[in-house]
Image 1 (cartoon, helix red, strand yellow):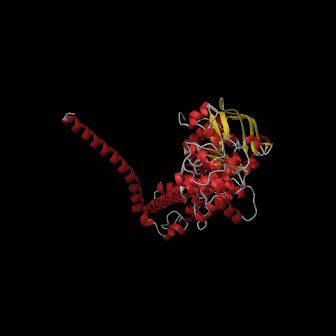
Image 2 (tube, rainbow over the protein chains, first blue to last red):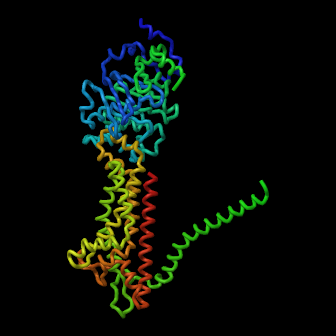
Image 3 (tube, helix red, strand yellow):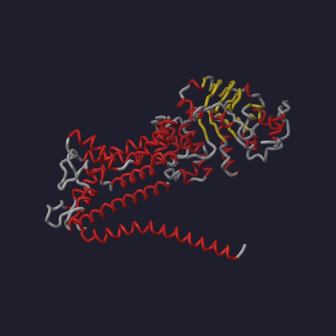
Length: 279
Length: 281
């Protein structure tokens, strides 16, 4: 019997909003899982300033990996290297290896990469178009010629938004509430059927009820998608993720099964952070 | 706090409030005075003939300025065709692509171009288009006005594109859109209302220009003979009629002034309407 699975519930996690993740299945170390993203010796620079230092991390397939750490620790920057979004910022440089299913992402066509690795941002950022057009956007620009409405419906269903918007698909996306907008952004990302979904603090602008909806959604998406979520909210990481990586000052301090990291962290800095002594 | 000091403060406050209020009121008055004066003097000579007939020969009363109204619209069309695309694309460059140094140079030059006296731009168009073919033409007038449209369009386009949140560009690029595709499918549509408004205002601004037309489009008392020939325009017509010795021409000049002002006011209102509507989305 693994000692971790019998460990008490982490003190920080709140009352579970759904059936807790079965720990027996996730107690295996990340390295034993099938790995979707394999990051080796990753360095990232904004001009002269280095933001990520020699980071090594394996992100397992069909699991949620949470990235936690204090503000400015480089977790968002790191997440944005995974779909090469940082390339849109001037004077940035990346070193090291990122393998997506064994393929080096920096050698891939960036358009193809971003189709496979979708992203949801901190603030809901729908386009000033109709709800339908928002979801169809990714399909249109990728030259999809099949039946758009079927895929739009499917994506909205996957994002648990269909029932709320099925009668108002032509309405402006701005008419939706913040939480609906964020789920619309998730539907938009899902429409091109990505293998990986990167979530950059997707709930930081949302209220607790809406946050719970998004976490629920992430739980269901695990069947089809590998997810990496940056969050400021440790309870969220504890609730919604299978693995957690703790970052500090651009370095990866600790990475393990979520329940283990929150109950028996090995590094004193991790313990200090999750017990609220800084950050 | 002593009583006199409070009194003094209150007095200064009241004086300044009055001064700024009077100045603000004066600004409004100027437009309404001009409009009222034009209505008074031009309104009476404004009739259907003014919009449908050609100018009468010297000595005869009556007639209209149909050719000048159409001529002005034709010149604006030329200016729009030549100036707006350049202004739009340069604005897109400044807002979306530009580096530091070159953008600074372009922005500075644009502001300078905006400040170049219109008569100088007229001379430039004269040298560029009129001199080689040795006659005035609608085309030359269009070139002069087109040049004047560019700087206004560039800066307003840039402003409105900068107003589009960066998160929208990121959203499009995260879905695999290239930079150009992001601009065309997301950024430009998001800013389209503002950009269109800027263009309308730019055209309204040059619609009343007289100096650059005097020796480019020149003027014509008849319907123009095509783009390569001199063409009538409202501002030049006003100029010619206003300095003439005939009372009837003076009245027609007032009427033309009224029509021109109303056209500009209408396009301003239209621009505001478009902007308000695009913000409501």
